[in-house]
Amino acid sequence: MLEGLEVAEIFKSKISFENDVFRLDSQYFKKEYLKEDSNRGKFDNKYLGQIAFITDGQHGYHEVDENSPVRHLTAKNAKGWFANDIDADRIAKWVDDNNKRSSLKKDDLILSTRGTVGFCAIVDSDVLPSNIDQDVARIKIEKKSILPTVALTYLNSKVGQDWFERNQTGMVQQGIALWRVREIPLPIFSDNFQNVIDEIIKISKKHKNNSKQTYSIAETLLLETLGINDFTPNTNPVNVKSFKDSFLSTGRLDAEYYQKKYEEVVARIKNQKHERLANLVKIRKSIEPGSDVYSDEGLPFLRVADFNKFGLNEPEKKLSSLFCKENKGLLEKLKPKKETILFSKDGSVGTAYMLRADQNFITSGAILHLTVRDKEQILPEYLTLVLNSKLVQMQAERDAGGSIILHWRLDEIENVVVPVIDYSEQQKIAELVEESFKLKKQSDQLLETAKRAVEIAIEQDEKQAMEYISQRSEATEKK
Image 1 (cartoon, rainbow, N blue to C red):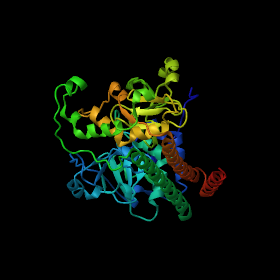
Image 2 (cartoon, rainbow, N blue to C red):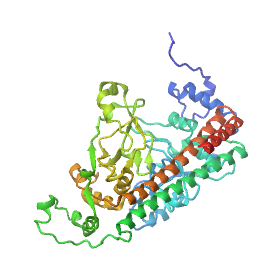
Image 3 (cartoon, one colour):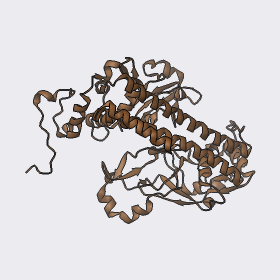
Image 4 (tube, helix red, strand yellow):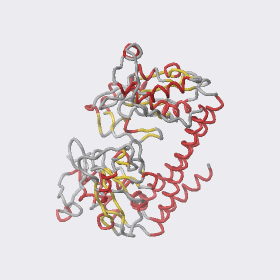
């Protein structure tokens, strides 16, 4: 009668252990979770609240100030192990001054507690000064029993992520309360093992920083080649236009569209060899199947929030097996191929990322697929850098501005003006871009090594975990 079902027997006396909410549902007692509890019990365990100060960010209003040095980090800035400030607002200094409890310091951890729960990243000086919003927890490790980098690795491991999956609550939007974050159990590994994990994370961070620096060199080389590395946008808000030169030629009446800074950046590009984007690439749309076909299992569905110019994140949503079966032919055609440039047209408009391998996912309708028509005219790596540069970002700002939710129309994207520099210079820039992504890949591989080593230590023991690290190091050296 019970064939094919997962069954676990639990003594009533054990139910309250690490279960202050007294959960009785079967989901909470999955065999996988119980096994992880048992494995973690081989170590001395500390609750996170015993060894760390934990708080969240300001609830309610915060004042945005573009001239402020203080970043406002949200859940999306906790993706990828190392805190980033991509698309982060700058908040008024008084907001940070009035919320010092959530003002971040070096080696703090930030943890997403609402929406997608469990993104965890460590803070370094490159994102400071910063504060957080109410959907992010600040974790300041205060006891020496565990290193911040080791706590980071554990929370990002399968065991840590399973704990979040098991303990998050909510129907439409998942969340986890701060008091529950304080009750996260952490296994306390030996000092030797912690030091090895700490060193791996630090080397990974070094590769990540070198990756960003190399990418920045490529951006600088582009601007220097174009002779506009010293270009400063015009701040004069006044620009007089005739009706003929405004609405009749563009269809736009909003004053923001005609700011001089936009005219100047386009003029700088047009002063040298250039081309319309539509003449350089084939543009293909994807689909928007609707949230009713989202599923916990199935084909990954990449949305704008799941990528940036530095890479892809694991898609939060998946398309159901039934939907995929019914639309198999269409979906196979929509899976992006190597060297396809993903380009966002809604939300965070103008973000570009070139794929370095064929992908088994579908993108949302907010992401266009760009394929270079002639690689002897323009290299896809070079074009991707240009699309992410201020040269194109200002065109996106001009076209898509003025709306609460930004939307960049296809006809406007087709008319984006792209500088086409000498091919040999394109190659130099492309080589720098690829070196940047090579370093990023090395960083990601080290993070995966650290994460898997922690999992092996819990599943088996630290000796096996150390052997795994040694094997991975030897394999890397042979490459």
